Image 1 (cartoon, rainbow, N blue to C red):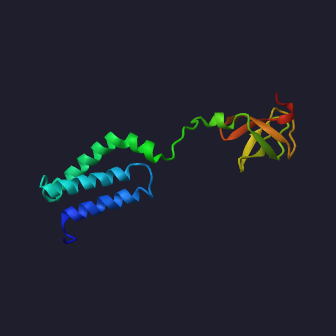
Image 2 (cartoon, one colour):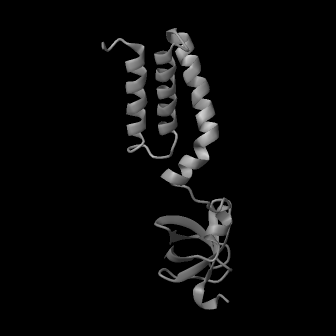
Image 3 (cartoon, rainbow, N blue to C red):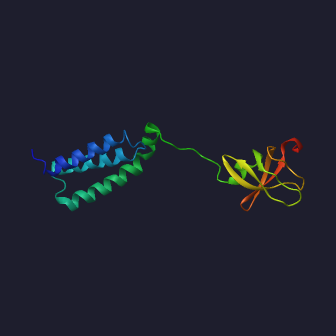
Length: 153
């Protein structure tokens, strides 16, 4: 057995990809490795010959395995999948922040700290002092509209 034998090369690549699934979870890499083993088997029994036929078979086998077994591997391997809210407005609504620069009176903008970042903020027209806890009502452009927590309902 020599290392230039295409059967050995395809089998080694397949095993490496399948072992890489331990480092790169998700269920895709193991299927690509399985397609390499399909090619190695086809080369071994003489079904395909040459690089072009091997790559074509690998491509087709990869697609078939991915379409056929992706759901199964996702269940077995798991992965990082979660459904999150896509509307940022709903994520910040009714959250509590701290005033860093006084807001008001009238339309005088101040600064608040929310989620570790300072934001420009407008109040309800009254003056809101530094250090006051405020509730976020909505976002307007790149600023937030807030009201003091003690006056909120």
